[in-house]
Image 1 (cartoon, rainbow, N blue to C red):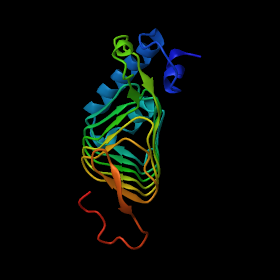
Image 2: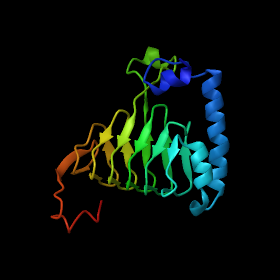
Image 3: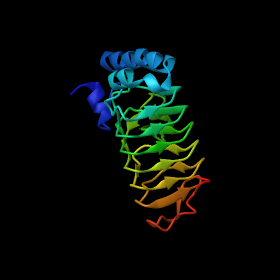
Image 4: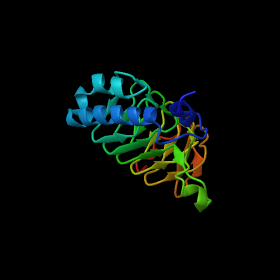
Length: 192
């Protein structure tokens, strides 16, 4: 098993491994090309950078990530400008997901024990955003979180735990504010 595979699966890994460094360097080249393009002309580069990128999706630039190949973006998904994804583990965005500007997705974490942090010990857990989710601007999604289908994350929230489907969540740390009822939310969350 490669060090990149270990990292992606949440196992202990060597962050200075040549293979990991090569993947990071490759992502840097593609990011430079992506961020130099108009946002409506990035499909070819995005398909080289990401593990999966549906051509019906859009990424506004600037966009930043660490590896790229651990990011999987579904159909008709939109990432607004300034999104940052630290993708040491997979980050999966479903179909019809809207991500507001300056959102951050962090799969990496570090031990509470300072002695282990001195060794730069890192562990990564995946992030999953299911179909039809709307994430407001300046949201931080932390490692290991799954955001359930059709949920809305209010702007400036920090999501530290799983979000049930059909939920409006907000705050720091984000908490469920209420359930979203199909066909009953026409006043729906324009402020999210």
